[in-house]
Length: 306
Ligand SMILES: C[S@@+](CC[C@H](N)C(=O)[O-])C[C@H]1O[C@@H](n2cnc3c(N)ncnc32)[C@H](O)[C@@H]1O
Image (tube, rainbow, N blue to C red; front, side, top):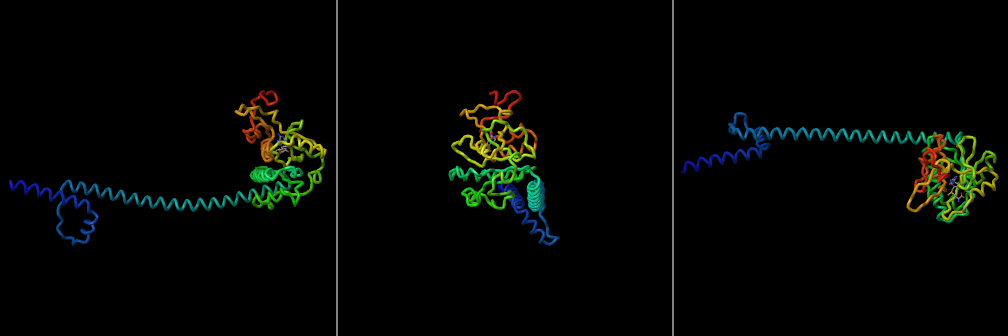
């Protein structure tokens, strides 16, 4: 009886020893390294040496995973630095190309005037909205592949509108455009001018480089009907509307809302796209705001027949 007890407690002691050895394997290995070479080492049982091999493999795998992580982090750091350098370089290149395109446009670009002679008709709120639209319009011109030669005409130096443009639009006074108190007819002959008006009879057929296009710089929250048409008549120039009836049809919407009167920057975007692509369909499809309740029509389904 006594013998049986002592045998199983010997086994238990060995088991505990093996476990401690496994748990402290690093410590033991270090201790072993400090031990003299010829120090006697207790032989491991089969089970313990299997566990030890497993542990050693786990350790090696962890080590190599850590090394791999470190390498990946180093590579990532490098590629982030490269990306930033590349990004800064391409940002500079994009800026330089934009400057070049705008400079070229100021010599040979298609001429577009925004007529600001009606700005006294706007409330403070409308004036602020027009200032924001002029910022968007200029932004579109900067990004365009074929920018226009842009004039802000009849813009008085002491006007509320100019003060608002300067207040709201960073760098407004350095925009690459021509700003003048003169009217468009002080600069261009009347026969070369087409005034764009939503109320004109005639539809614009094409956007061509020999014509000077004039847009009314106006925000009228409560619509002042035919203002730009009257202005065209007053100037004695041709008036034309965007060819919406010729290329678009009404789209059903909850409020049954349909409007062909766009903001000045939206008309400008359509003109840029039409000039760039030579296609009204493409230009209207890309730039006409969906919220206005029109979409480009499949052949034979036009706004005029809706
Ligand atoms: C908000 S609109 C001004 C609307 C104003 N009731 C008027 O009589 O012109 C601003 C300018 O964008 C241009 N515009 C807007 N919609 C147009 C359209 N469908 N066709 C041609 N020009 C348009 C015109 O030059 C217009 O003066």
